[in-house]
Every structure is written in structure tokens, then in C-alpha cells.
Length: 596
Image (cartoon, rainbow, N blue to C red):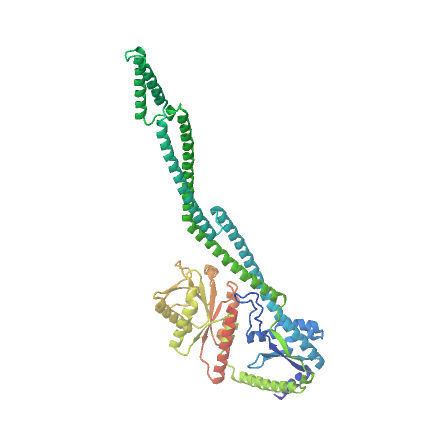
């Protein structure tokens, strides 16, 4: 013990070098919230880190490595992380970084300043990286919204051109005014057409009274009067004139009865000719009025139809405008967020600012005695403990072996423990092994083998009896097991419930094998079908040695062992129980690491 203490002290003196410690305080810089380019939406800002994350940035490798590179003080020969510390003043936003310089007080002050600069630069880069990442996303979104905005503007323009639509209020007013004017013009045209019709009717009636036959009849009657003044009615000239008058009267009567007679028949007199020309002119004017009425009626129908369709057009146009406004609002918002992200991407403030720089008066030179003294005490303690352990091992060593020694013998991780304190304890352990480890592997495809060279026949019979019982309770059907040992070398208990034993040459399919020695002859080829195998080892010297010897042979035909099933006899004495506990704990931890 004294020897180890002296050796520890000498080691401390040899290894210890003086150091100069200095602390620098940093205050957490709040992320600014005033960088906002619009009144709408929430401004972009880098993530606000919690205190634990901020503390991690103080000890990050990147700023420390950069500080070492900048300082050029020979710190490359050390592990810089062992020379620095970081802490937080409880209940505040003040953090401390401490540097233990192995060189001098001047180096401690210089390096701590450089380190603080690099820490702040590191967090600035951290914020810039975040802002640039957001900027890339925002640029993509802004480009998408710009395309949508151009598309909706083009759609609105095409809609306006197709529907001849500009503004709802002005177009409704224009159509209503147009309808009013059409109604007025239509009424005027109808009045004009009616007036022309009446004038034509009056002139037609007047024209019918201006027939040339009437004039001829009048002249004939005058001639008859003149003839009668000279001749009697029996005179041929008078008779001829009377006949002419009768004919003219008959013609006049026929014309008066025929209302559809062409008006040209009534022309021939100056007045008749003038009336006829007036009728022709009025007829033309009436046709023009009627044509105007037709045109105005068509315009009225078109305007009414347009007015009827206008609400639907207005609704669709307003929907397009609303869609454009929404896109424009989103584009404006994203554009402003992009501007804010660009501000941080080009000049982020970082998360730190120096609260109090390194003070030369606060440089602490570490003691040259404390470390050697502590190492001496630790060395003495370790020496005493090691001496006690060696004495206990030499005085209490028996044929019993630990779980770790069993795993070393099989060169496989621990798969299960079977404590032999009682029959019921053995069964519970075997049942647990069946449910957790063995049953999931017996999937009807993979083949598993138990290597039992480390168990005597009595112990192995108990193992199979417990396994058969567990199988029956779990699956309510027996499990087939193929024995690969030569005939007569090991006798299986065929009466065990839950197990059906098969010979090595039995053609019945089977996925669980058992062997305690290498099969002979053709049976050896069965080993090629084994996908994984488990070695059962009792924790005594003879079993462990026997397993080690047998593995050198069986591993010529199989892959390395997949698991160790330890058949554990109970430990006697406090020391052995503690040793067992430690051995089992270590074996499980090592097995878990190898499995992962």
C-alpha cells in the first residue's frame, strides 16, 4: 500500500505541470425582434437556443480548434478540451468560460480573448447558416408565388377580353343607360312608323279619288251635254257617248270594289301623280322606321341578355381578383420575410457578447503539491484494494467458475442463466429462456442446435424435462428434437411430455438439434443445416475445460457459437455472491454491446 502511494506521488510529480487559469464572462445576447420589413406576419428571426444548448456552444470543437489555430501558442501538442471549462451563473444569463493555460498567465489572457471571439463568430455562423437555409426555401416560395401572380394576371386579362368586361359599376351603369336610350329610340321609331302608316292610308284614299277614269267620265259627260244640245238621244254619236259613259262608270265601280288594285292605276293626273310620289316616299320612310325598330329590338335583347349575364361575370371576375389579392398578399409577406432572412444571412449578431473580459489580477496559478498528493492517496487506495483482492482470490479460489469464464470458454455472448438452487427455479429459468430467446428463433425455417458437452447426463435430462414442460404449457404441442450423437452414446427420455426425439437419420423434418460430440459418418453432414447454435456450460472447472476442448473440434464444421446458456450452481459466501453479481452484470453488459 505504501509502495503504491509513493509510486502515485512520484507519478504526480512527473506528470503534473503548472497551469494558469483565467475565467471570462459572457452574457446571452437576446435574438433581436425589431428586424421586420412589414406590418403583417411575424418577422423572421433565428431560433432562440435554451441555456443547455448555449452552454454546449461554449465547448464546441470548431471555435476551440479555430482559437488554437489563431493563437499559435503550441497548444496543438495538448488536447484543448482538457484545458477548458464552461459554466452558467445560476439564475442569470451570464456564462463563464475558463482556460487553464499550461504556458503562462499572458497566454491565458490572450487565448481566452481569442476563444471568446471564436465562440461568438461560431454562433454568428450558426445563425447565418440557419438564415441561409430559410432564405433558400423562401426564394423558392417567392418564385412560386411570382409565377402564380403572373398566371392569375394573365387569366384575369383573358377573362376580361373574352367577356368584354372592365369594371362592374361602370359597365352596369353603361348597360342601363344603353337600355334607356334604346327604349327611347324604340318608342320614337314606333311612333314614326305609325305616323307614316296613317299618312299613307290617307293619301291612298285621296289618290283613289284622283283616278283618270273619273276625269274621262267627266269629259264624256260634258261631251254628251254638248251633243244633246245638237242631237237627239237616238243619234249614233249620242248613243256612242252614252255607251262610253256606261263603260267608264262600270270601270270606276270595279276599281272602287278592288282595294288591292295597284296605285299606279290611279295616276295620270297631275294631282294623282304627286300623291303617288308622296305615298312612295312615305312608304320608304316607313320601311326605314320598321328596320330601325328591328335593329333597336335586337340591341335591346342583346343589352338585356348582357345585363342578365353580368352578375355571373362580376362574381367570376371578383373571385379571380380575390385570388390575385391573396396571392399578392402571400407574395408580399414572403418577400418581406426573404428580406429579413437576407439581413441575418449577411450579418447575424450571434448569441454572445463579452460581459467581462479577462482580468490579469484574476489569473490563478494552480498548486504544484495538490495533484501529486491526490495521486499518492489514490495510488495507496488502489494498491490496498488490489492487494486485498489478490489475497481473497488466492485464499478462496475453488473449482467453481464465473459467468464471464463460461462465456470466454464458448467465445459467445451470454444468452441465459439457469440457477440450480431448486427444480422450480430451474424450470422458471428454462421457461423464460424458451419464451424470450429460443421460441422466436424456431420459425420453421432456421435450424438451431444445443451443444451440451458442458453438462453431465443428469443435468442435461433435467434441462430437457424443463424445456418439454415449458413447450407444452406454451404451445400445447410437442417439439421435435433430433439427437445427433452416435447410437447408444446418449439415451433420450422418450417419455418426456412436450418433446419428440428423432434419430439423426430419421426423415421427419425437424428444426431443433442436440449434440454433445461431433456426429459420425453421414450424420456429420447434418451440421451443414445448422443456422445457429447455443452451448450449455455448467459453471465448474471441468465443464468449462471440456467445452474449450470440444469447441476446437466442433468449430471446424460450424460458425462461431451464437450464445452461451450458463448452468449456474449457487455461490457460497458473501465474497463469492458479490463476485457472481459483478460477473453476471459485466457479462450481460458485454453481451448487450456485442448484440448491438
